[in-house]
Image 1 (cartoon, helix red, strand yellow):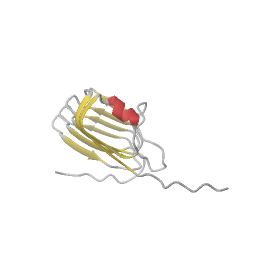
Image 2: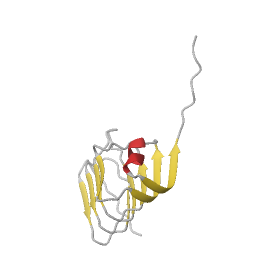
Image 3: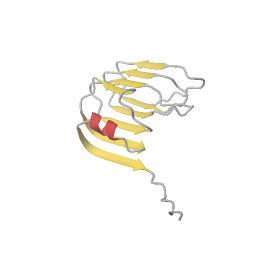
Image 4: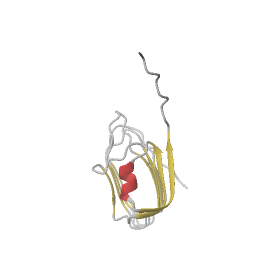
Length: 124
């Protein structure tokens, strides 16, 4: 397994590969992210930009089966093109996102991980 570290400003990143099967894309401060990989099965991504804004993400893979998503999912800015509606595994990290769960109709294994803030006592 190999990794690439991106250093710098809000550049757009495009990954196109006919053989890529596994991609972990955890980069902050990156603008638009585009992935076109017909053999991509495993995808991990963080959708947070450096300034707190959510960056655009587009993934095109007809055989995608394992997705982990960190951060907010906005279906207008985050797209899974060519992917079916069934996943073997979906992990929603940091924030439960119903929009992402609606994108995939059938999920064999669902993993949710998020924090719950303590409730403040009522001040009278």
